[in-house]
Length: 426
Image 1 (cartoon, rainbow, N blue to C red):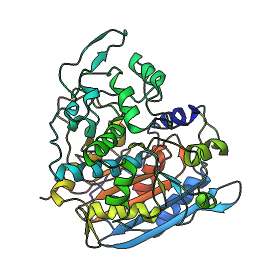
Image 2 (cartoon, rainbow, N blue to C red; image 1 turned 45 degrees about the vertical axis):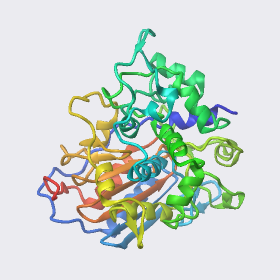
Image 3 (cartoon, rainbow, N blue to C red; image 1 turned 90 degrees about the horizontal axis):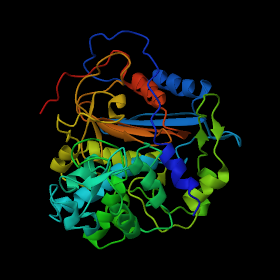
Image 4 (cartoon, one colour; image 1 turned 180 degrees about the horizontal axis):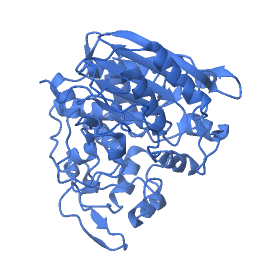
């Protein structure tokens, strides 16, 4: 297998620094959100004219109906192929919330408890060690809990695309996410690797969602991809979303564009690498990346969440489970949170970032306490705002993840001055 595939994916996870300012100071918050179509259109167009993206699209539902769809630029800039509602994009880490929903379906069935040791179901994780920055090893002070893999507190690495400690280097050498491994082999390799820190003591983005996929496979007795298709994608009508892609989708497939490390215009990723990543034979069905689909499909997933687990009469999760997943799960003592604070006044639930306070200043993303969301390495984004009964899905294909695109979109959706209520109504 060409290791450039996974290495490129992991490198794309690094978050761009926040360097964009809002035009006006904070003021009194509007009572509710009213969608200004012209403002959002202008924001999307500005993403293209600024050179930060080749093509973008955004879809918004509020109060049970579509209130906005807009697009700008090209899915394939060189071929002059415009972005459309049918454009297929690589979702990268927006796969993770789907994996979390799959695992929590099994929690609802009593297959596990959140505070069970992970090794109760996956014994390869029974004897974990911590590797310090000097390379020395010592046993973990407590087991990894299932809760830890859902909230990124297990201590796993994600390789040198995310950090440069000795455990990150060891992760790269072991290559647990090689596409020629199945999930069982991934777990076997990962279980032999050291952790970065004691479970439960820090937040760090990691391979944990892929461990969730292995756990789904183990508890359900089904191949992970088949489970998700049967229990989430098909029931929600997300028929064009999946890990397995047919060649007939290639004409609708968005090209990936890379932002050079030193700045300058975005450049197209090698098409051969894009095709190999998405269409080459593979054994791995990762829980943390790999889904591809159109914008309306992912909106159906988001609408299910704003609908408290139900869409069009189909129940995927119980309302209490959605509430649990979208409630901050990080203890105040977990102060080491890597780059999570760069996304705003955030905690983290179960596979979702969760807003826990109003924006602290004019540079922070607009949003409402109680919203939950996640994004992807190629700058895709979705969020669910229960207060305003609103959900947004944003598609772009710029790597690494460009947070300025998200700030521009949120500013256009909410307005410069929006803070939302100072607390969530129960």
